[in-house]
Amino acid sequence: MTTTRERRTQAERREGTIAALLDGTVRCLAERGYAATSTAAVCAEAGVSQGALFRHFPTRQALLVATAEHVATRNVDAFRATAGADVDTVDDVVAVLGRLRTIVLSPANQTWRELLVAARSDADLRAALVPARESLQAQMLGAAADLWGDRLRDHDLAAVLSIVVNMLDGLAFSALDPDPAAAPGRTVERALRLLAEMIVSHYPQEHP
Image 1: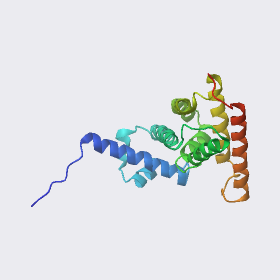
Image 2: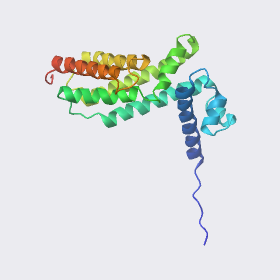
Image 3: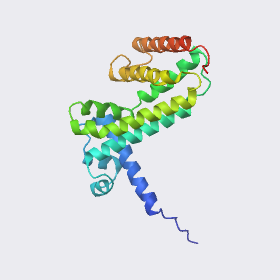
Image 4: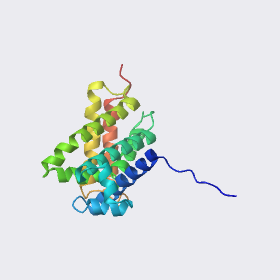
């Protein structure tokens, strides 16, 4: 008796190759940094030939930008999956900030930090990242509006999100939070609670 294994379609093979390349780039950026994330290093990490890479991404920069977009979408999806709609108390807000902090500090999100630092001195990369950055902001605003749009004033939603994200990004860039169990980590926990207290006290109830 013989069995035939179902063969993947061309579209499925293409999607699998692209996914492997994007995930390989994420790992390279997180572990090796921007300068050492060459196309050869990505191909070795992903188990894909350079010929296959360039069929999907004509340049290294195109691969890096696509990886940033991939991580952004994945992070927003992760945030939506972990953040509940019932955010009424300080403890609720602290829990949401803690989940968002985990995403921001994740190895995958190191992709964004590496690329943003590199873009400071690379005008071409900086310009190429603009659509990805705008897309990330729009996705985050959309997630925040869907979850808590009835609790925050429309003109405050973007500002509150900016405060939260910039605070967490600052923690990720600094050495303040190397170990959540250590004293600096406890200081960060207190900072998140203070931020939560300010948010809840400023928006004590739903606004029409």
